[in-house]
Image (tube, rainbow, N blue to C red):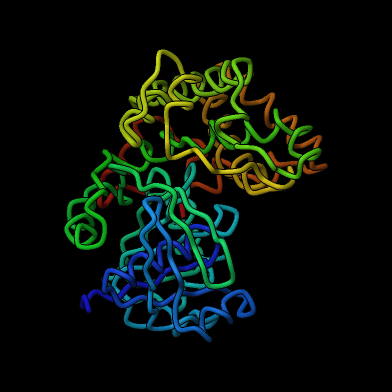
Length: 369
């Protein structure tokens, strides 16, 4: 048994896979979910059955499966938050009274501005614990929950950038996390992890533009293979180009989606369409069963809305992204711009690029509380 104490928050597709995989490798893992009914089968069985893309199987025996946040956090050295970005605010507020000095909190992933919002909530909650808040660029696994106490991992990424807030704490963070996942590598700061947010490009575009097919088949088609046609790939490329341009306006060299596919999955192609189809990790992953899915209600307000807000703030044309936001608002009957991460919620309102850069990199930079 590895001595590192790890808490995984969230028992969805990603959380169950991560908790099972870590436990199967000998780590002491606690799994927290706010609704106990969702983890009751896991608690009864004492862990999670895990299958891998290459046919291997394992049983991840958990130390605890609980809906008590205080029990979940007490004594944990690493807290892996694996919930949709729509839950980051509530998780931060729930954790704030029980956090302890020296704990590491990693958002897997932060989407866009996750670590900034999480830290802002801790500040607003008067949390005095000396903790490191960090975010990963995306989730390490392509995975699915396949039963009440079962999970499947389709593929694991080769490398995954991660940054602490502020970035001067990233080396210490990685020194601990290399014991868990050596795939984590340093990103310059959370602007890079936030703006290299590939979920912002892939998830809402494919869901919204395949809405008719999703509703007709209830998701019975391969999302990234059959759902990416040449015309939809062109929209993906437009949204991706706008994201990269917003990053550039802030002094961030974001990677393109084709570059990311090459690094994360060793998938190559002459264009984005071909690179997606060359990725074996996407094969077998079906589309969402309905368009009311986290690929829209998470990725639009917590990925596209903040990217669009940064684009407007710094003079970038984001019409492709704004079009997707409009489609989501109409299809879901929801004002995602109002619900989403604003510059104020991330503590960035009114700040210049230089001030934002200092905030995300320097220990004692002034922050908007």
